[in-house]
Length: 593
Image (cartoon, rainbow, N blue to C red; front, side, top):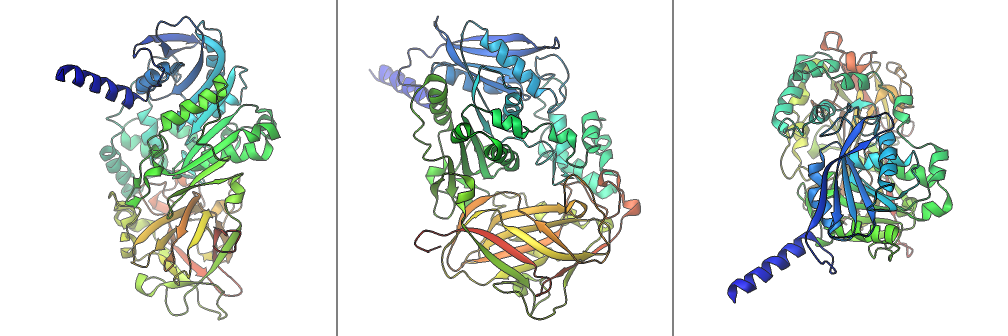
């Protein structure tokens, strides 16, 4: 009796963990491994196909195209096959068991089009195909949609990479991570051990301290990477990068339901929102009504595996969504004609941190309806000490104050010791270690008189002069609670020569006062509690994590310490040069913030 009870309990747990539908007849699944799909140029891609067992019926199909080897989708293949779908996972061209060469971004759309057409002709396909996947796999959905295969009926792009905008560079500043990822996806194998952090931390610090140009990074790693070099040849947002986005006409042609998913702390939030906002601007009315956006309090990985804790921040249990169930409900609606998912309360769903509640809006522009403007000042301080910081005030200073100043000398290599770089703790979003770094400017507001909802991106408009033709600027914003706890809100970077456009570099006129606008990297939603203050930290970008700017007029990929220049920056804040922070806020209809 006890043995039978144990077996029943074990079976129940197994079914529960797999998230299998109630009508499940069998846990068994038919799998066709290493099926070859011929592309229009003759290259054959490898796929694994998961089919409901003992079924002679045709089914809707869910497609995942991955550069990370199809084995990663085995559990998901079982889940969907057990719920009445065929799932097919395809190794990207040149990866895993697929033929050809993997060149990121360049073949994914055309291959996706060929794959969808091939699937539509298979005996197990009922003609309805959806796509699923996150990060690179999310971007691949948009690139496939750009070719408009007729049997593609829906997509769920999650944390979609924005080529040239958030990866491999942000605001035209390349990340050291870009080469790490290229090596992770090089050759045919998974390369998981190569991807490990320790090896790359040593290599990027060696590049940073050696003073050699960024384009030599692959030689330090030990493998000349032609894709890395190709990317560096496109430092601006030129035609090469623009070709990976839908044109206005292509956005207007979209006629399928879309569920876009990202997180407040997702490193590819920009890519997700670029695709989303472009469709909202240029799409046709009917299609836009069926494009939903979900934004949770998640990191990049958390968009697929949500948790209620991140970097020391705590959220409610409701932050943990059953993503498999959401995907299933979405596909049941869009591919099987079922009910619209109950989770979709409106077209935009976002998590409000602080209250730990899900909020809903008809469009992303309506999540904020006002602004709070705070002006930088340092009437009683030089703004370099957290205990005697500058101010964020409601009015600009009437006095013709001397500007605050910082110096960035790339030759000193101070960034390797900066707390903001060295902080790898599990509490990195609530750390205040950065206050030990003296080469920054700090501005703090008075305590808020009431709870204030900040929804969107914090913007910094700063009037700055510098003695060099280029450097990289950075700001970070925090909430400082009444208990003096620090909560990370947002940051942004800007390369000075791209201050007016990412498409064209312009020299900075030495010692001329110029307004620089840093628009915020990620949007977020948070209630700033009564008694809390806003703290702004301004600095240059000096970190082994990023391409180093040696402050002279040459593409930073090819600059070296040999010609480095010391940058002296002055930040002005008075009635003539009103440097300010702009917080997007939401005010309830009754006038209470």
